Length: 251
Image (spheres, rainbow, N blue to C red):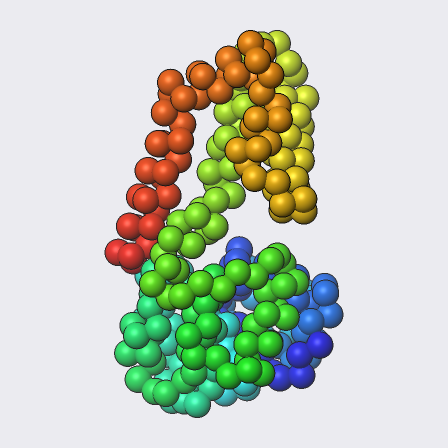
């Protein structure tokens, strides 16, 4: 369990998920967490988890040792300007897409230790690295990449759930077209993706190997693979990641 005081600026979908996961996993104690969000509904949600509700961003920084910045990219400058000098010599963990360490530092006007996460750790001291890993491990796996690859990681991992959901929806639509009930089609498509992902992550099987294992000579799967290749699925997905990465760089 982390013993430092943790502040969270922005408790929306991602910030809230991180906080909830850390509390449920006993990584954080609710009395050690200070939260501020401009949306009353988000503050109400955080209050329901028993954490301390701050009156503004500055109070979060004053009370906490490590501050998680989880606002939208367009709101970063305003949020950091409200922190004033309270960020000086504090640790700032940012999960904001497209905003580099250099830009974050210029916005603060002070000298915090900045930890850019998806996760990325360009300036962590050991204890803060350990704290970040504990918090993020409560909601998923941790992969460390250099900052120049953070936009690629954001494009792949940040937007990934949307892309996978679209693929599951498309698979289900195909099943419905062939006569399957909608609920059955969604369940089969989602379970297929889940099982395949577990084989890759837990057994270390290469995706191409799984494809070869399932694809019998002259069978149904190879017919489907040919249709996907004709539809340029691989190229479309690669272009999807490129476009998202470019957008991340522009933010």
